[in-house]
Length: 395
Image (cartoon, rainbow, N blue to C red; front, side, top):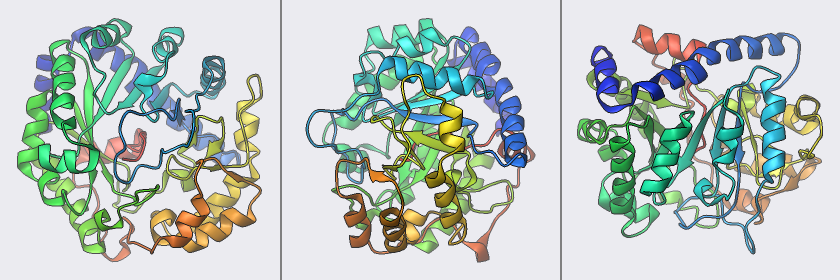
């Protein structure tokens, strides 16, 4: 079905925005990954892509969200954000994911892609603030792709994200389509919505919305409302993998996951150094739901040296790879709590992250060594090996 994909893109996306995506996102990513592999050979750790949480502020309180900071929301100063991006560009990075909270509540959001015209930005949003003025600004900028969170139809989506959210999101998505903007849909797979969002009807629905890509995540029970009942079982993760491959064969849309490589083996981006997260307090964290940091970005500090020289990040990588190819948050919460307490890092969540981990029960993750299924598409095998599909935030 990927043969029909270019036709869909040409029908729904502005030619100028398609060209910008190819020029600023896809083509540079090949060089970015080559530079990343060279750094690994040199014993250096600096990811090919960075996740920047611009603010804690959010208008929603979704179940299982790790962003729930007490008091006034924190924000990364614009000059710090720009300094991080400038430093990362010197390492060949050209793609950045901007998230929150809700990044559209960050007052200087659109100044970031405006200042860095040679980069491409993915903005993860709940979609509620995609009004006509915002969509027009995105269209004019030309170096932004929007990833809208949607967790199924109205019943399943609103059960997790709040009553009336589904209808508001669809209004924003329709504005994106009318403006010819390249956008995707991010769907978190839970035990509740599993059959719906991994079915053909849902994939067809996302195609009709005009999305260029559908990005799946597995639910992680974290935060003050962790909702462990939504976590996937081991059998569900195996089925998740099988259904992904089936959907890829049947629907003209790029279907992305953050979990498996081209051989079907589990991937943890943080353990491999493929992506680290910089939170709104400036802390360099392994990944968005693991809000713990020992190293903080200074306004004019050496970003590369700060990440490459981080004992905490290197120790975390060693800790993770010794336990699983999957997710240590899910599989080893108690051991992870011990590791964090013994480290030189500090809790940047604003909650009691270690206490939450100790209270969590171990859950299966996407590491299923007895049931690994390699990619059966040459296109996806190439993309996984050369571009890497784990660029965005988790759920």
